[in-house]
Image 1: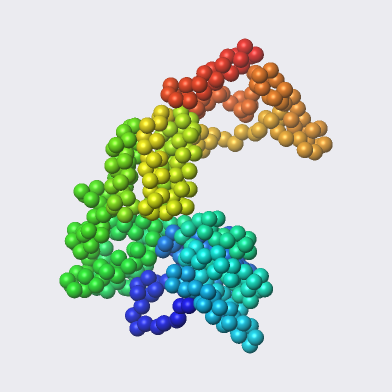
Image 2: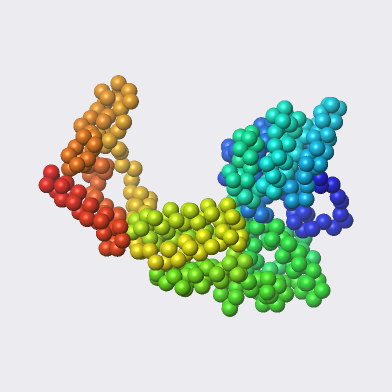
Length: 434
């Protein structure tokens, strides 16, 4: 079990750790007003939960803030180093606190997925009895890595990687509070590179800044330029920028190679990114996007394969799971291409933004009450399944007076050839009816 330690000069990540909810950067989908974790804090009643998210996004910080907010005794267990002995000690401490009428206890288990089934089971009776509140932190999918019995007793909160804006806020906070030795300013190009390198991980950003501070003090540097940054942290940063390309230039090259149906080039850029330290989960998200944006309904299997590859990586991790991602890269590259769905989505989005709010036609409205029926809700609606061929020829599903916008225009490739034929057939039936 982790022992509390004090240091005359704790690491930068520790010095900048938020002391209240107002200082937390990111995770506003959970901590914003009226949202799940904010409500938990404001209720004054802690509940067992699992914080799931990538490294450096605030899991430990939120757990600590819960303890201080609820005035709870906070016990930390590292599942990497600990075992049943540490769990037993935590139970003893919590029992003593309870017997003495002391504060409630929160037991925080970092990397809880590292505990095996029997170790996780050891928490169950004490969570059930209310002896302590259990908070687990994990970078792995709890569905696969946490026992269902423990999972059923804990709310799961999904934390997201910090955005570039979040990381710039954190960088500015470190500078404003003069927490980085010797460094007074960071040039914009250097800041962009640091934020890209951090890749959503606040701890990585702060540890890198601390290394820079040590080097800056030794060389009597007060401003971090991009050139000096590369000189000091060279190989570490170049792994995201080999050959001079920026990180996002490389993902762009991968995307364009997939779009251009070149499996060799796509594999090359994919392996370049893995070798450069890119997070495979990030790569999986981009592949899922490519399946929708560049293939769409020309081959709907592409999206399913991308989702399957992401799930395989979640289960296996690196390096085994990376092969499934590579399989997906090649499939996407050789699949028939269509951006018809992507264009239809953007056109519909733009149309809705500039168009007024048109009322739903009466015949398309539901009529669950007698009053609604009297007001002609649902009147004259034609149930397609009762029509010939399962199609109500001539029926209108758009608002009154709105011309058919034609957002979706299938291309002459893959499954969309058949989709186009089907749509043309239906249009002909509508025309005959009208």
